[in-house]
Length: 117
Image (cartoon, rainbow, N blue to C red; front, side):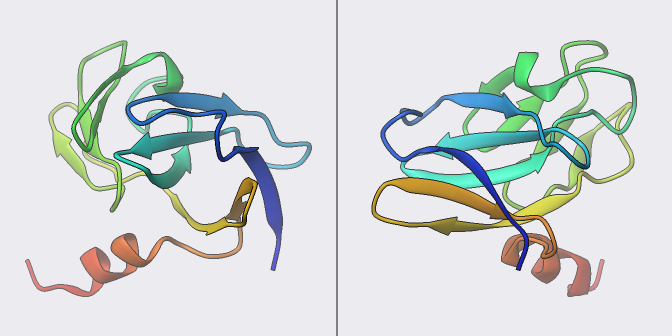
């Protein structure tokens, strides 16, 4: 397991997000959606833009450049011009900290990829 510390549990209130730089690999965007943490790659798949600078509404993140949207739990691109899905990460929450396992996709993303269209 390759854990990356994203934040302290009490650091990110519900409805907040932040960018986390990694020593190796792409930056991660961590989200607190109603007390549940999620993580995706920070870079929009359509344009060079940090999703941490985008607008968060319910379980969607809107890219600040061309306003395409992604469903955060699954990473699915849901609004044009975004067509490629985001990489998601499995979250590990301890008593005090929130980690991403950068080797594993989030369960919601795996389920979405396996469901018929």
